[in-house]
Structures are given as structure tokens and as C-alpha cells.
Length: 187
Image (tube, rainbow, N blue to C red):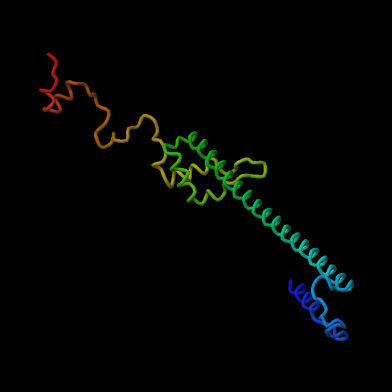
């Protein structure tokens, strides 16, 4: 742009060989587009053509930079999507395995198992299979967080503190709790 201004200014300045003097009629020569010499017209046209080519080259570089930015953003988005998908696959596989391992609270177990050292071995291999979610992982989880697992069948959580398992017939309860004697008795 600066070069264009210089060319225009140079075209306005009188050449040192020719002096602007009144012509024989007493008028000054005309200035402006109509009085441009053919040489100056060619110079101006060459400059404008060069400026257009440079603008197109700059535009092409801008477009290239834009395309590179789009490709980079696409690659980053693809990576984020793959990471999210991988996390979802790991969670799904863990929840399935947790059901088989009799975990009472599988979603809580998933959050807690990620804090264990053994979780570092869990990954997705190049074939897309999950590796590392096995009995050893659940054994370590059971050692660290036993409350997440179902109690063996036949045991009652409160059995030890209440004496457990006695006959709870109506007559035994009325004998044990005198307040029940007058409540809803059958006659």
C-alpha cells in the first residue's frame, strides 16, 4: 500500500527535465489521469498488477493458515472424543465385571477403584479390548473397600448384635414385649 502511494506521488511531481510553465496560450498544463504519459501508465499498471498478485499470495497464506488451524482443531477434538469414548468403554467393562464380582454399589466402586494402584494397569489395547479388569483388581478393591461387596448369602448384617435368627412368632413377640399384649389380640 505504501508503495502505491509513492508511485502516485511520483506521478504527480513534475520531472526535473520538464518545467511546469505556462504554455504559449498562457495556460498551465493539465494534471491528472488525462495527462499521464504512456510510460507512467505502464508503470502504474505494473504496480497494480504486482499488488494484486501479492494480495492473492497473502490471501493464499491466510487460507493455508486457516486450513492448518482447522486441521489442528479437528485433531484435538478427535483426541478428546477418543479419550471420552475410552473412558466410557472402561466404565462399562468395569460395571459388567463388578456385577459378576457381586459388588453392591458398582458406580461407587468405579469411582473408588480409580484411586487404587492396580487401576494403572487397566487400559484398552490396540485391538480395542479392555485389559486389567480381572479378579486381581476386585481382590484388591475388596481388601481396600469391603463395604462395596455383597455379604455372603445366609449371613445377616445385624445377626451378631441381636442374637439373630430366633423364632419370631406372634406369641413369642407378645411374651417378649408386654406392650404388644393388648395390641391387636385375636380372640
